[in-house]
Length: 145
Image (cartoon, rainbow, N blue to C red; front, side, top):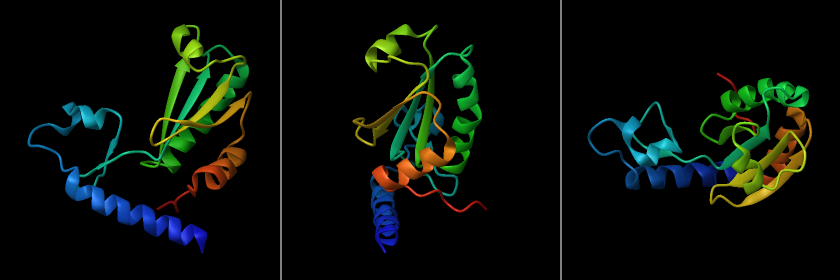
């Protein structure tokens, strides 16, 4: 019942936002609002992800390499709901300092307002991420078409 209420609330918010966030004439890809959002394929409304999943690691780190397919699956399965960002800490050291990384990989989850609500260090299995997203953010994996 709670899940149904969360889904209905999200749909209502999205439909209410649609009228307020219509794209101006021109190329929507160049709009600053679209840079951090996803454009819905069936409308001109901009959908802001509910969660940002930040993976902090390195291309040469074995557990980080193991996270790559999981990040791709999250990007596909939670399209429009979860935005996935990867920082290679050997190339972008400031990201490690910004997020206080102690161990590679580190996963940081931010809410829609950019506030951290969960952090994990080390390899993080897909099933555990899905469970955490459902419990902490109320996001359930959408049915695949």
